[in-house]
Length: 186
Image 1 (cartoon, rainbow, N blue to C red):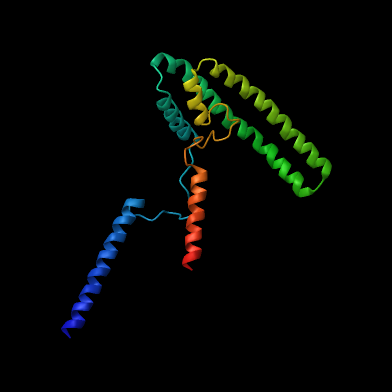
Image 2 (cartoon, rainbow, N blue to C red):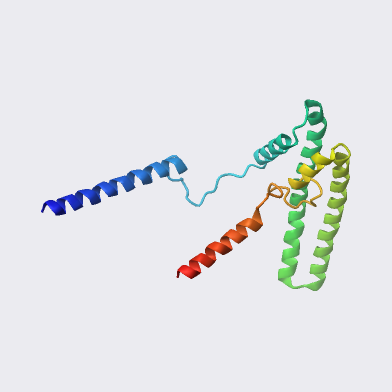
């Protein structure tokens, strides 16, 4: 009987430890309160994201106050321009998708031409603004902004932090290794 009571006490103690650990973890992750609507995601604030992005860029460039006063507005302008261009293109892309869904070749060709024309117009405007910035930069500053996806990128990586050493490629390799390990274990 003593052995059963001891085992029962150990199981209850272990259960209490697990429960407390779970409650502590839940508090750290979400303040201890479940979300009002589990499907609700945090609100996306483009302005806040832009401010954080600019802060990262400016920290990386390590500019003097004078340089910052000249270069920062141009970088902000490029960043804002890229976001606005994406917003301008969205309805044209939606129209192109509708045309594809309709399978009407003339409608598809017309919508595709509108997208191409808009992209060419946007590219020209962006390249002009980018060139104005590049004329003010040192080679090292241009290289840093290239790595961050701000210039010489044709918009690739602009909103996602640009290139990161060991970024997507390393992540893909890691996922493949994990998948291989799981298959070998099964």
